[in-house]
Image (tube, helix red, strand yellow):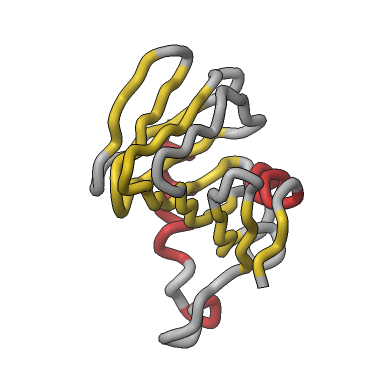
Length: 141
């Protein structure tokens, strides 16, 4: 668990260090949209961080429901806007701004929002999971 925490902190803080920083005012990463309207802005992945982890910003539209699914990696959420109902193996927790949740394989997860939708920073360990998710969604130009 300590290694996971170190990787997460490194990913979250490392984007602003040295020559890895974005120019102020630019939007980092590439965006993708799911058929249901959820968008993913994938900011750190194997192209700039390496395979250890990936980081993205997920924006869920109002009244969305991801449907129950699994991931092949640890998935950690930090909610920055709105409320996200995070249902893991049938157990529900409402994540509000400033709260975090996670899923580990082979957990089953479902993400649901209310009228306001939600935005969350998501970290996947190992990192290939972010790219795998993006590959199924339509690129947003």
